[in-house]
Image (cartoon, rainbow, N blue to C red; front, side, top):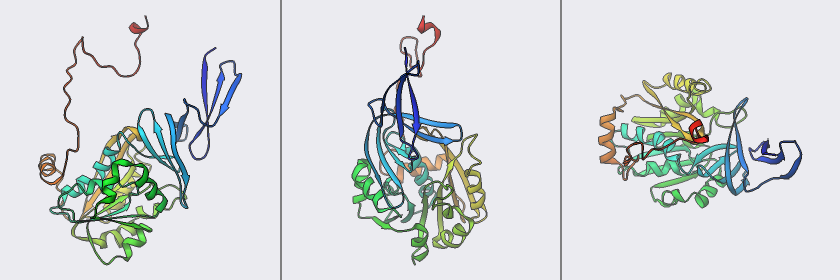
Length: 320
């Protein structure tokens, strides 16, 4: 009889893996096994699962559940409250899109305020800009920050950088209470979910009364804006874009596919000064103003009959 796997998901997203024969005769039941999977609910009737090598760490802070998973496909994965936050193999897509368009659109950015961003990746990307003198990263959860500093090795240098000022506080209260203004303000916040604390940081009143007042004259605001796919863009992405349009004169939305998020993701950039995001100008600024390469451009493979590449799966000819 063939073996199958059933996923009985707990609230925190970790599956209870139950092996059984196709005759429905149950043979073993365990919390974790070498062939266990992690399951995340994307939407009603839609779930996203990926195979695990092992669970590296699990914990609970005052605010949220935290886990670091070693996955077979995405490498190390940070999960908070059962939701994928970033994956080792493709987090650069999200964070480069979040940070670089805004900083490259500014003529000479020197100061950045990051709301959230506890894992340190947004700060890492901002610190790659040669003109930056100060990055303030404000996250509400000390345990998440400590967890990421310990386990996410890619960001060790960023956390040790003297230009980084780490603040543990509510981002709204911290930004509102500061006398200084910033060239760039970044919203690297959790998605607005019902019952969560972050939805107030996506409102018109917050953008108008706090964010805008804390930007320098030519300042730029950018925020992650949630899933932006064909079926998901009306959840929050289009609303966040329209809300920001009520506050700033120049507003642009942009998207990119993030494989580990199982969707296209969206960001919104805004300013009261014109935004220079033309591709040719951006390429020139990247070469002049950022340390290191952003995207790989070293493909050498040429597709031939004798040297072909294939996506996962098999056609009928292979099976015969």
